[in-house]
Amino acid sequence: MPGALDQTAMLAAIATIRSWRTDPDGAAGACPACGAKGLVITDCSARPHAEWYRLQCADCGLEEMLNIPLGTSGSGGAQ
Ligand SMILES: [Zn+2]
Image (cartoon, rainbow, N blue to C red):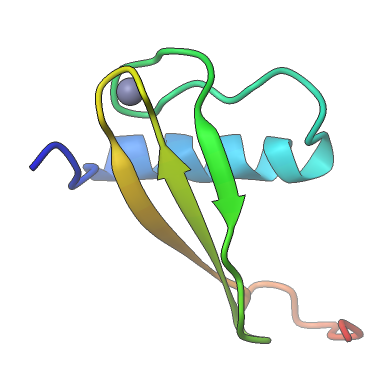
């Protein structure tokens, strides 16, 4: 299977997701595995405590579900 990102790729993927969230209409993310542009990011978040994103790359066949814990923002206030 082509998935299984290593830690470096995982951090790159998270950074890509963060910038995508800030500017969804901006430049498409680059695939953390092969670097190709046009990474497809789907927000699959369903819980209040974590965010799930599906990353899909048509170029190398990457399909990865990525979990981003929300534990770092301590101030709360999210609805
Ligand atoms: Zn790729």
